[in-house]
Length: 267
Image 1: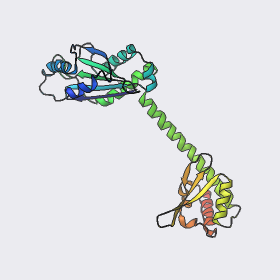
Image 2: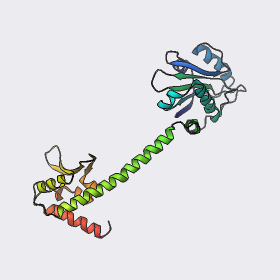
Image 3: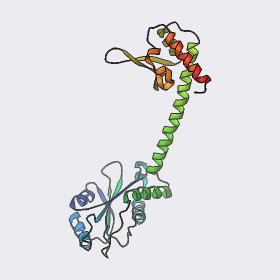
Image 4: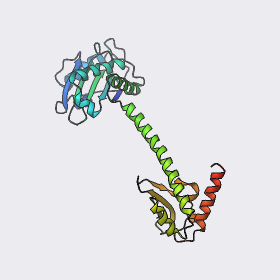
């Protein structure tokens, strides 16, 4: 679930966008009697005129459940969530003017809320960090109701990326071991080296620039199709001069010796 909230000047444009029966249906309202966007905003303006200092007198909010959650949530659920969301943002749903409208024109069902920021006594409801508060309010509501939270999805994505990085680290180590095993067979040229690596499931390709010159090499794991620059496998493998195609293998032998030295020194 995603929660968005901001203080704005409001006006007819916002009301016409939110309160549109072609996009969805009205879910809930409080202290408003108007039949159309113009009438509703005029009612809010009567209260807003009690405060002549502020320019942003309207709250515009969105509460957006995950697609799968939205498909199974009832109007009762959506209404309860809307009022809980307002409460968490310091907006009393029993004392403050607001209207909530569900948009269903897209697969992703979501709730738009317009609320008066000016209270009946003319004082403003704080909008301090209202955006962040909206995000956390949605996260808490989703967590309490066993729904998908945008923040939890973000955390899961980060964990997945970190896990993939760890897996790629293992894969790079495996490819380097294959490189070392091929070097131990003393290949007599770059093509022989390529062929041996291919037999171990690693395709080695030269990277050619626009001038037709070799500027590097890449190694491709046949199982995962993951592509690595040579320097990502080992820092010495990234030096073009050490792996020139069709050249004698002194350069590659030098790579192996340097790598062996680094290993012995604990790099």
